[in-house]
Image (cartoon, rainbow, N blue to C red; front, side, top):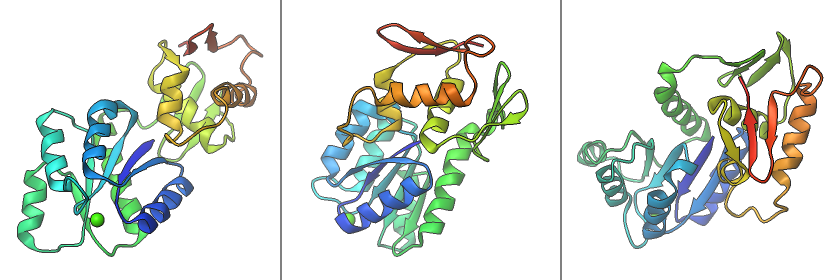
Length: 224
Ligand code: CA
């Protein structure tokens, strides 16, 4: 799960990013309103949620929210606001925000709101994803193969969840990088392959035939 964090208070943004990463999310920080709007317009599919501060340089959160909704982008938006007036709350919801949080707030509260928002669209999805003999429970962050639990790192879990949400589709490395690593990531481009290799080993792929295929020059495909 990847979150776009739009917040111009650098210290708060860094602290939130750290907290989110600790919870297993990937987060990108943007500290300017117009840049954030551009990012959302062009890269909406990279993100699962936007956390949007209300007071921002160049374009405020309310305007971003309105324009994003006008473009029919349904990405969940959680607004951070220092204002507590009732009319602001109404305005935020009218502008298409899914929820808001008044500063100062605890990280635990933010995390609870995020979980509630991320659960909402998946209510229609089964609680457990199943592909072949692999079962993955996103809420409990558990994976089992042939009923036996497989311990995975957060990145490996994220990769497997992504594959299981796109079964039988060729998933390219760039999609995986965009979805599971933040945009400041400047490491080796083979980072995806390294994590996939570890994931394969842990789920015992190849022992009874391969479910996670390499598609040469493109990426991977999880076969059902
Ligand atoms: Ca601000």
